[in-house]
Image 1 (cartoon, rainbow, N blue to C red):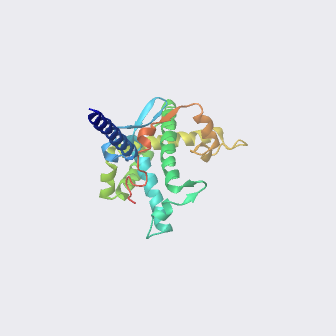
Image 2 (cartoon, rainbow, N blue to C red; image 1 turned 135 degrees about the vertical axis):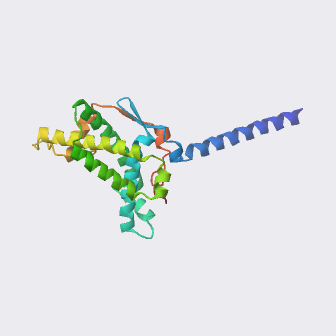
Image 3 (cartoon, one colour; image 1 turned 90 degrees about the horizontal axis):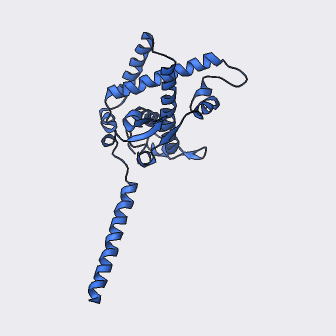
Length: 221
């Protein structure tokens, strides 16, 4: 009887260890990006943005960093991604920049809509050209790894274009003065943008965002 109880106790302990091990490795496992496009990455002023909604920013930032990495060390681009600059690894800073840009453009896009801003025919043409260039620069493998349709990329880039138009309008409206109302001051690291950001809310879905393997979504290391 005692032997049976010992076996039962050991079995329960073993089961607990196995479950905890599975949960531990599952918590550290990165997402397969194209299989999780519908998951919410961040909520901005109550608007949920999925991974598909911010996929452009991830792809843009990854390909930009990879281009710099190929100049820095053509035979080992990882060397650049793993550089420690201003207290952060390039890879970590790049991921943060992608999220910051997505939040910034969502806020400015909504403000642009409130202002009644629209793209002119010339701006629409420029947007189509930029989107075409961006899409053409991705290899077929990269497009597959991203898993987002070209129409979705165009939609995101249109929001970005309207956000930029609003940013330009702010700059022209306020002018450059002693408070530094320049175009850059309304960018993600600008002092005037930080003031605007204080009037808005955003919440990153860490359970999803932490599992996005930035640096290995469209590029591969």
